[in-house]
Image (cartoon, rainbow, N blue to C red; front, side, top):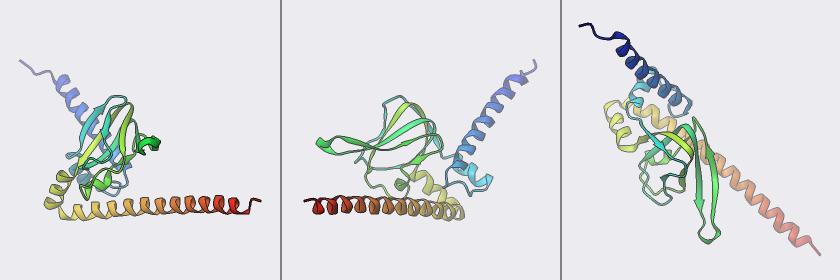
Length: 181
């Protein structure tokens, strides 16, 4: 009896298509943009795909961070809780955006809450898996850690600029209040 080659071909094609889509998404993320194909495949093997329903919490502010997430499909809202004053959305992330990357370096508590807005598909990359890869492939580890440092430095610079802007705005309001009769 002859095997149904078209059935096997469609399975292999689907797997290859999924891997191509995963690789294409990872290439959009600055942490992985400079990787060679073989290095990217090593990272692809570590990525966990998870579906979230509308309103489902990806992680809560204050819980230990174990890894980062990449939005493949849908949206994720990042928000901060301010007790009785309520909550404030800090960012709305879409396909290709990533968040939680500081947890790749340290397991400190999450600084905000992440919630799926609409059904969302996320790829997760956790600290232990990544550091196991670093032990096996130190050159790839150096490359990824350098890219992570660059991303964190850019985000810190943007945060500093925003704080300066807010400080100036507050100073202007304060100065205007003093000059009123």
